[in-house]
Image (cartoon, rainbow, N blue to C red; front, top):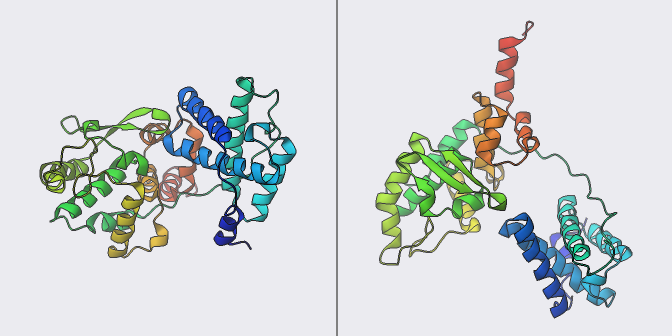
Length: 317
């Protein structure tokens, strides 16, 4: 089976991106941002996919990205499949191709869409990995709440679990998004869509402590920054930095790092709400899902609640 090193080697000797290809990709991404409001992370992923394809086309076929034919795309997809790229990676690439060539046709840059007949692979339905309530409690209590960094970490963990935030939403929160008096948080999610999320007493308690003591200590004499959560000296935290601290605190709490995923606390938030009686429509609003079908996957892991309902209502339970 091909390894990660094999996949990296596949694209290690490709030529640099041509200016014409770079311009075509940039115009497409600008249009996607303006028309569909795609998140920065999604646009960056599309850009990476399209750049690699453009460089491969120049080397293997001697042609521009905009001029690729259906056979070229088939060959490229087959090359990636042989190199061991996952179906999920292939599905994202196809989304990038549909977006790019669909935009090219709409702009009159070519008469046909070579990606129109390409279908995404069927993806396995992955169940969210949720922590138990006891594990969440242990994780939340792992940071040292007596020092500024520990208070910040505890506050971030409390807020992520209390509000069901995505990692990007958490680290990207501006201080102005928080209204402690009303006990609400304004979150900007995927596609720039905003939602209001209520705060529980515990998360409000830690937010007040963080804002009054920890955040000023971390900022020191540096100028005020927009980000709610800051690193020492005033810089904003990255997603990678946040998950490094989550892994560290998970180890302190005695939790297997394999049980912690980038969305672990968000999944736990949703699963525990369902277990305690929340309905799917409310959960959809809290999570910021555009479609209810996305939220429904949590019913597959909310077994405790389902067992309780069965025992309560079934005549033969």
